[in-house]
Amino acid sequence: MKLEQIVYLSHATSSLDSLELTSILQTARQANQQRKITGMLLYRDRRFLQVLEGPPEDLRDLLTRLAKDGRHGELQVLLQETIQSRVLGQWSMGFCDLDGAQAKSVQGYSSFLTEGFGSVECVRYPHQALHLLHSFRNAPPEVRARVGSATPVVSTAGSAREPQLQGSR
Image (cartoon, rainbow, N blue to C red; front, side, top):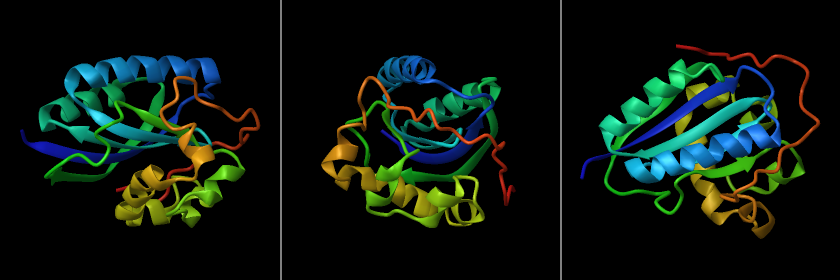
């Protein structure tokens, strides 16, 4: 079976509380299992950074649905490539909220976490974003415990500023 890997960046058009994120994750996990899509989703400051793996046609359909979803804005594909095998095969949708002190403890931590996923670094160097997403396999136990859990832990101390996407294509 031919596989592709896509890394995309988007922002939430409104603040999402833990119940909304949980609902999104449960729906996505069920749909991804049916379509044989795997991935990892990071959330910070109303920004989503996600890697998805699966059959190319299913990934295209999913991206089309995400682009039409009113909860997402400024969806931008950072990387799209053919892969030989899955890296995140065990997760129909791994998830971690990076608002908080734990972010710096992740191998592959980069300044785009402090600057936000919309930073120029993230857009110019999408393989760094991919490296960060993949590094969650080797994250400290307290981070791994949150990855893939049914209930995301969401910071209530969100930023009041509207995220700005820089370096758009």
